[in-house]
Length: 383
Image 1 (cartoon, rainbow, N blue to C red):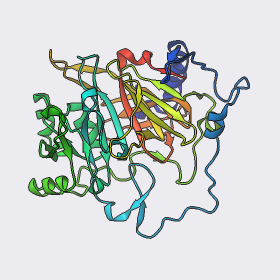
Image 2 (cartoon, rainbow, N blue to C red):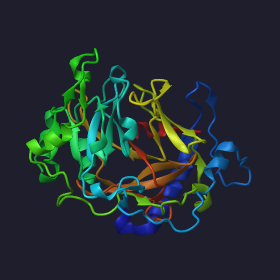
Image 3 (cartoon, rainbow, N blue to C red):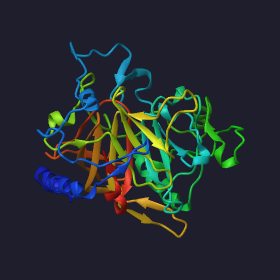
């Protein structure tokens, strides 16, 4: 489905059909605390809906008062839409590959990432996933990792941000992608080793000074280059405002717990009504950063239905992430909405659309993105 060719009516039709299919496909699920609850797909703004504490918290707008005025020396981050120091406005973010195997836990520094991708890393080991942490203010990193290898999909996604991809090797399938000038700036295996009592593959971390030293050593531009996409990556609401899906759209659904079809780590996003963010769970526990115990949490959750191609018998793969008019979910403030997504080129930004065919607005803050294999898309459960 080609959004730009067929326009808004096609997007609306696509998403209308998807809503019907999703109501059939999603069923009961086990929540993070082990209890089971059926999924209700009555629209949140239906007259039959009984609003609970979580949804009441989700519908509270941030008091805006007078229009927000940026303090001197600040700008709105292209990653989060929030005010950050103007001194790093032109600085390229990094995209760090973080091992998500149980042995690699606890993670360091992931809770400070602006955007976190979770992708299937291999078709083997129950489709084990890996995280890619996109960080704008990498100069403040104390410890991030552990760092592991990358895959072709990560190269394509990092290119959207003009990010410096930080990894430790990968299969030969990467070589053709790194040969492109838009992907040439990457760092592999030049980070610090930390003696943590684990096998060597779990000991590599980005520590203070690593990035500065490596960027200089390999003559990599620390600032945006000619392959950068101008402006914000997402279509953020005005800072200080709060997007409430059920107030804007007629078809929204409960979205306080989403369980993903990744069998290896059983990842979930669980909405915390107090913080109004989604907390990441895996291996049956809430993810907490080893640096400060902070939960890995997000204002926005985006799920993309995406097919993949297996590249060899080792389970290496590439998601078919250059595509148009594909289905997705957007979750914020305990509510969920079916959306469409498109990425039109290797360096092109993935764009998200609502059922009017307009570019989707999302709340300011951190974002979790996962590309869900199409053959398990119907196994996503929402509560």
